[in-house]
Length: 419
Image (tube, rainbow, N blue to C red):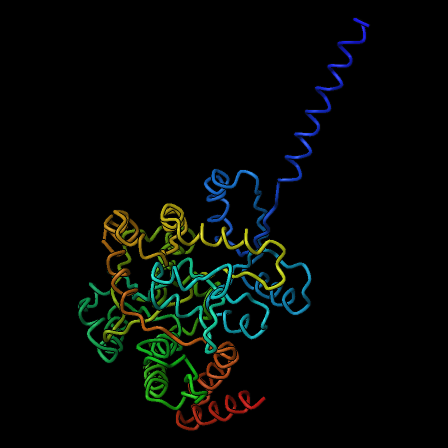
């Protein structure tokens, strides 16, 4: 009997150990987050902090290239297959994702996002809403618009920073001086000016292309002025006619063949890390010309209606967007400008930006973020952008009359609304 006692206790010990182990396995959960390049690095860096509060929850990050990710997620929403628990969406795709009708409305239980609305930059939170009042996404980062320019080129041209920013007309006139003195183009592509003017100073209650009443806005003065200035730049041969993100575009920025570029503040990170790292100290930042305030892009978190772990997904979304440390870490590592208001007084904002010659540019971008008008999101925004770009191309390259181009665009968009 004494000989059997050790094996008896051993069996009991093994049984208890296996029971605890199986219980731990049963409690372990996996949250699936689908995202695109760069944002995946932000999420992976935040996982250790997440695990401190949620030790029983693993996070599996599914990363695809930018366009591939959005296309795959649209397909998943339409077929209700291969859906993650959390889906990251870039601003320009929000309207298209909203049109699917397959994103959770975060105003209801258990989310109650209106209770934490005040924590986010107002224009960014507003962009996550649709006309019905539903809130379909949570902002993580924003892209306050900025003018980036080559300080060495404008100095050689006798142009001042004030000349670039005083007005759009002064900006274009400065471009003529810069090209005459240095041979450099003012901007990569004339349509860049049209894009920011279309996005800037949008009136309350308006979207980019549609009013809240469904009215098509593309014949408004905002669009007329955008097309006119873009045409003026093309007529004066001040743009290099480079397709954004193409090899000529990258080479031109790298080689000092263009004097300025307008984009979100995140562009500085791209210039510094892979587009033109050897140009460190040559670029500067300022506000957009003519007291224009606009934004480029922005990252949002969404939860599909048919996600398996909605409550846990919501905890993760709040963690990524409301945690000050996570937000500042993303800003430092990926130039992801925080959508969290509480992060905007962080000392990091006051530090000089080495790539911009020690300029305190983040203060400029913070001011810009405070001035950007909320834009109403419409499910047809992406298609409307394609229509407008097509008509602008005809104005710039086929000399089409601007009034006719915008009239044709309006007809096309009204047809879309009816269908």
